[in-house]
Length: 334
Image (cartoon, rainbow, N blue to C red; front, side, top):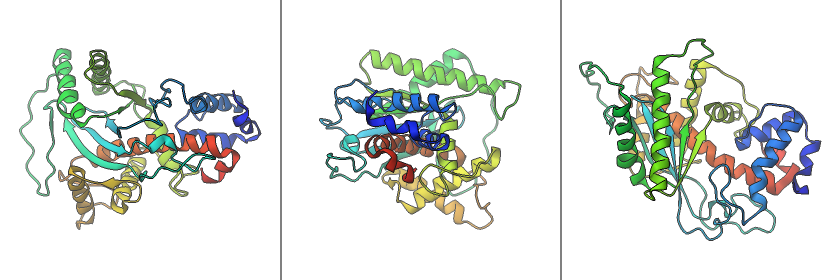
């Protein structure tokens, strides 16, 4: 490995862990393991003629890129699948940070939130956002036949996802157990089955030439650690831990602050209507401080998760360039 990263060897374990969290790299293990993980993740930045990196970013075409980056982030579910799309200019990874001897891109690097929605996959249609409370529909027996969900996977991708022309599709990885429970819930297995069908369908569509983007699996634990640890500094490091419902509410609060302030993301198009509903529900009297009750915006935690997942991935790529370009000076920014 190039000597450019030799400074990692003099870092303390906590500093290496901070670098790993800020760049979406596994942050557990000894110093030697962390150094190796960071070097492997940053090695594609060394070669402008290298092939696509393990995060789906092609460093060989970055300088000559003409099309925008459309990053489609999916929070997995069946009745409550949520997705958002973040767009960035072609010059995004030319240099998202002030690297030595590299030009600053002229285009703004703030991601643009162009789509933000929640879908009931069993119906394969977006759930409308309404400011009025309506009675829930009569319950119907739901089928989880694999052949039916193969149809749902294909419909979701061809009717809702691919028409947005994503260059990268981030899919939340599913776990077999939740909150450390010993039992594996049947509902979890169903979502895992649907997740696998999405990968298989996207692979098939890519091999057939229908779509040319990249699929990126996203570990929700890494996304959560990035945002939860970084709340105090706002840089992705050193944050108080939280679990379960507390963590969920804090993540909703973070996502709501991001779209309200408009500093980390610019909201346009149909996503603007979703943001207005989110902020409107929060300001309505009688609502919980950190959560959303009723059916006004549906389950906001799913919408929040897909947004934070997409923004985390964007920041991971930018932080990798920071670590590569600034060396030990980057430690003060993480």
